[in-house]
Image 1 (cartoon, protein in one colour):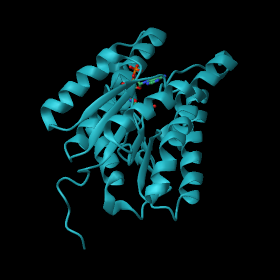
Image 2 (cartoon, rainbow, N blue to C red):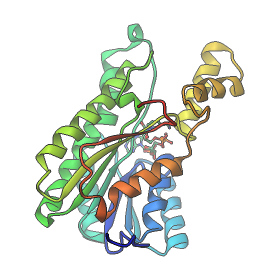
Image 3 (cartoon, rainbow, N blue to C red):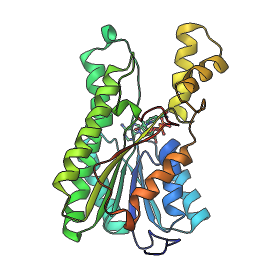
Length: 264
Ligand code: NAP
């Protein structure tokens, strides 16, 4: 048995998409607290820079930002190249940036559908393509995709989101088989409703559509979780840390629900 290291990511460079806020920011904190240098990738520079300063101050790690839209292949390529030039090869990639818009199927246009697929699925593919060759060459890497319980089961009024997240789970499984002998693991984390801006938007949407008050709308979302609550971003981050650890090398191709028992 190897002893648990307190700084298992010392000397490693982790890139977290959507790392400026929400689940991504909690993941950045958890990795930085255990020694990783961080690159935060997202669209909003001010949010990224605020989080970067926070990481440097709280954890004393090298942290940088990369402003890019994850659906823009050229911007993603340039952002990864800059991150690698500044902080070295990426050994931990967390594909977290995403969006969860809802619409009944009859109002799901082709444009809406493609937008969900681009933001949640194509982005994951584009970022992995940037990081995987160097991981394979090094014989080591951790790729962690933040999918959703919507990657494992269906829900009403979110066909595009559910299809895109099932795509992320499928990509995770296939790539894990392709990389199985390379030292690179590929896993997905599948949260239920988490306390973030995305869930606040969902609550606002329910309030607008049904006339329910905010507390009733929150309670409705919490009801889907057998523990009767929303999930803290830190709970998702803890699972990411576990998957990212050097001694988690035999765990690959998994899609792990973080949903209070909603999915078994
Ligand atoms: P959030 O608070 O809305 O944050 C989303 C993050 O993604 C932001 O940092 C945002 O940064 C970034 N992002 C969005 N579109 C982007 C784009 N086109 N290019 C680059 N960055 C982009 O969301 P969250 O709740 O933390 O969700 C994070 C992930 O968890 C998503 O993949 C989501 O599907 C998944 N998830 C969330 C929940 C939940 O209940 N919240 C449940 C299951 C799964 P900018 O806006 O600055 O670009």
